[in-house]
Every structure is written in structure tokens, then in C-alpha cells.
Length: 226
Image (tube, rainbow, N blue to C red; front, side, top):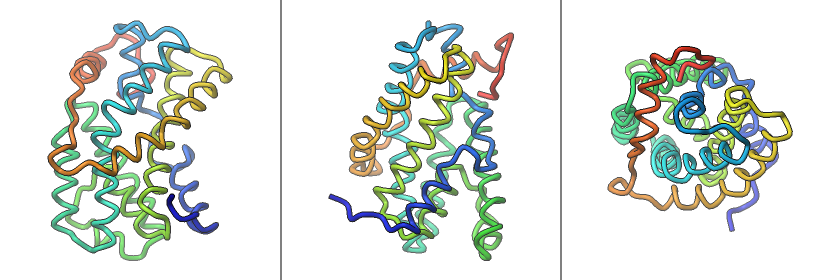
């Protein structure tokens, strides 16, 4: 079992995972809005299944795995490794919207980091960081374990996804909380599997999600940027 996180580190992780962080996560649905129109996601049960599948089949095997590796690389000050992981994240965006999301959220996260870490501008001067890599930098500066950092990153992702589903399906707040409760139970297993993946095991193959994201670019009525 991982060692208990200190109070200070726990509070920092809660802060980093907060939807109030000014990085724009609320403006992206990561395909949920398109799935409502074209993939039959029209109920609490279907939304829960969709997001859970996305957690296990896409997020955990891709961004979450790269994020876990990036925390260790930041702590080791291994900049070539950071660049390698950042390039992998950027190159695996399968639509213009997904690229925009990780680029914009990464850029906004770096701006927020400048308020809290004096060396942020120098560190990211020639590194256009994707969102997972910028988030990993922040976790690397806490005393939290990689495991706990991954839990925070995954829960923040899940909370944004549920908030998008509540608006797009639409669902009631209680339905959203039930979905989030299910995801909270499944996230620890997703984190464990993500942390065990090597470079040749990470993947971002989600063809239906990519197609829906591309279709969303011309969707008639949209609330979200992805």
C-alpha cells in the first residue's frame, strides 16, 4: 500500500485537481457532446458507461500513463525524457480539437504555475507543454507520491467529464454525482494499470472517439470546444 499522503501534499493535490483551477477544462467535453448526438449517449446509464470506457480504454492507457512517467522525469530533472513524453502526448491527439485542448490547457496551466514557482518561465521557455506534462510538473513539486498524483489527475479528468455530461445529455446533479461515485471506485484500478505501462505499452487508439471529435468540429449546436 502507498504511504499516506501528508496534509500539505494532500491539500496541494486537491487544489491541482479542482475544477476552479483557471485552465479552461470546463470548456471541453472530450467527445461527450458529439456522442450525445451520434452515439446514443442519452441517459445516465449510457453516460456512465461511456465515461468509464473512456477512462479505462483511452485515458488510463494514454495520458495517465505518460503523466505518471512525467512526474518521475520532472523529479529527476530529466529534460530529454520530458520532451519525449510531451511530444508523445501532442502527436497522439487525433483531431484538431483534441490538439487545441491539450495545447491550450497546458499553456494556461503554465501561466498559473508562474504564480507559484519562480522558475516556471525558465523551465518552460522552449517547451510548449501539453496539459499532462504541465500538471506533472506541479505534482513533482509536491511531496505526493506518483500514485497519489495520478489519483488527483484522474479524478480531475473524471469531474470535468461528468460536468460536461450533465450539461450535454442533459442529466440532473444527482445523476452526475452517481456517475462520479462510480468513477471514483474505478479510478484506483485505472491508476495501478497506468503506472505499470512502459513506453511500448502506452497507446491512444480510440477510433470512435477520434471520429466523433472530428465530427464535433462541424456539429450544428455546441456548448463545448471538444
